[in-house]
Image (cartoon, rainbow, N blue to C red; front, side, top):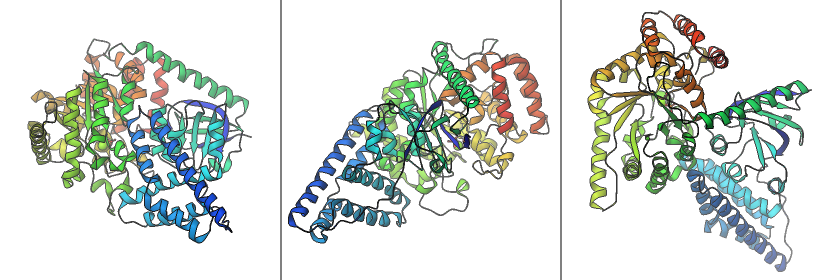
Length: 592
Ligand code: PEP
Ligand code: MG
């Protein structure tokens, strides 16, 4: 009988294939005592060879990842860790003086180092433990020979099932070997999820016990669209998912055909439909999906993959240059680091009871100007390669914008003094994601060049509903009158002063929200890459003359139910059959 598991969709697509179980063993190996000087020599040599082999592997992966800037940077960090002279000396000492075999010496040293790192107070350093474990496992694999070797020599592709995957394990796997990924742990912002998305491999994470339940070689279905995994599927399930896979792939192919059609309503109003990206390399796909520019580049993902980026202007620069150059002349809105809140909690060196109300976004940037300057300087330098705009997250007052403008002026002057080429200071915009920004919008607009509504946070802060809590997810509702009214206020105030306004939260791709967002007159919808074609289709059946009055009518409504019903009636009369599935889905999960 088949087993059906549900987890978090991490990378879209459907795949069907045999399970390959990759067990993540603890770094413990058998102790073998050496008796002769000759045996010591042999073990020292085995260790040196393992280091050389590991270095070669990492360099190879780094080369293979030359088009994935963040992944390449991660490999460079791993090479640095591998070359750490004190760790190497410690292992050699143990072989020579304690007369233990190379793998035992390596595992003892690694376990000691890992313990020290895990106990560190500074979360940045604590996070390095994962990288050290990753490098250590590679060295051990080269001494012992493990499943990873078997995996890399497989000649037919598999579905990888594991408790968890380290970033370099994921990055090191080739697309040809891998049909899909299913893991017990991880979230949609975990390293593995990010890499799987960028590699285009369907993945589901947070399955809790897939590694326990799967049997090597058994058939597995990965549904990375809805977050389902089926072990040992029956004939009906196989038929259903083969069909879904075909439809998904056909839709992808269709995308390529329609990509050149610009987004416009049925009565001819052009709408900027752009992409949200988390990873610089995704820029390469925006035009293929039919998007116009990038409405949100969540740069904190670079920081997620490479913590050292904050002190390394060059790493920032390479990523931004790649994105703006790729999209040129289309616009790219690069959001400065939005760390904190639910994102990368462990990277924030503080124990906050309410992280969403705490040290987050612009607050962290302004409190650490030296690090922030590196990002701004890189942005100014990258700006000469295309059409870059800078956007600040979590803004609550105009003084924050003024402060960043001052920093940009100073950094520009310094770059000029140093003879470093740069672009013009890019337009500076803010995210509208707090009620403070909405109610104080007239105080903010004189200082901004554009704004973009972050409906995920605006909903959370307006309704006092933690966007990540499963206990209150039924209350998270972007169609609540209090949220809808705020969107109208922002759109109207921007129109009054002629300022461009977009939206980049999840609401922008919600089929029931799109008529309202267009009706209120937003200039842009920025949505996840893969949703661009669907959203374009929804836009194409809407008439501005109808949605303007529809949107206005919702301002008098008392509840989200009323608003939802009103839009649903309109949408049902307008959207083609195929999109009704989407609407049902929205009704189920309320688009959060
Ligand atoms: C938002 O809050 O709507 C938004 C787009 O930003 P993020 O989801 O990254 O917080
Ligand atoms: Mg936000």
